[in-house]
Length: 260
Image (cartoon, rainbow, N blue to C red):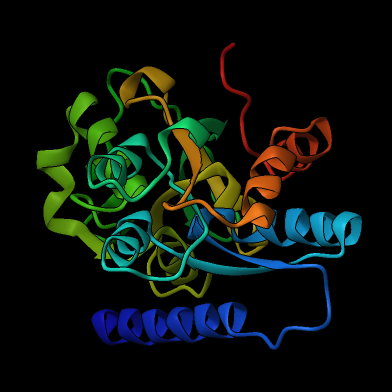
């Protein structure tokens, strides 16, 4: 049953991506297509609206797991800007010659949290933390642990804490972090590991604990123009993302400032 529900959520997510990406254009100065991770859906809606209002340009967004987006760009998808939820997929495209290295910069950070449906008691992630005991045989949903950044970070944290081998049989993996969030929000799975920003997007989940930063690699979202980088609107949007106004929106959406 849970796996059929996951497929339904994935189909809904893909349809949502199509509607966002293929919205009809209106008369404006120019347009650009932004490929961004699913965890930035809410933030990009606000950033895109502000950029459009300031410039009279039009932005089209496609949201999915960073791995999916990177492979689409590698295969020639018409993206002008790529934002990844980890440096590895940006490195992947840079090595393939599909982004402009001189436009690349680290945009923002995030935190990793354990969530549960509804109001649950918080727990402390300490050296004696027993996630398997908390699960008690119930499911833990995560994004793909070998491909999607949220899942990669989550698995790394569980390995560091000595929990991965204990809970791996109870882990259900999804195509992106927003599908994992939806499963917990809809009571289809009791627990999940998502970004702090995702947890903020649903009133139906509660944050049980925040994983210590040292338990996983630092969460960094790099951004860059997709080669050949001839779209001036895309370059302008990248510059806009560096502004105090854009950074303020990202912080309001729960993202974390990066060290200088």
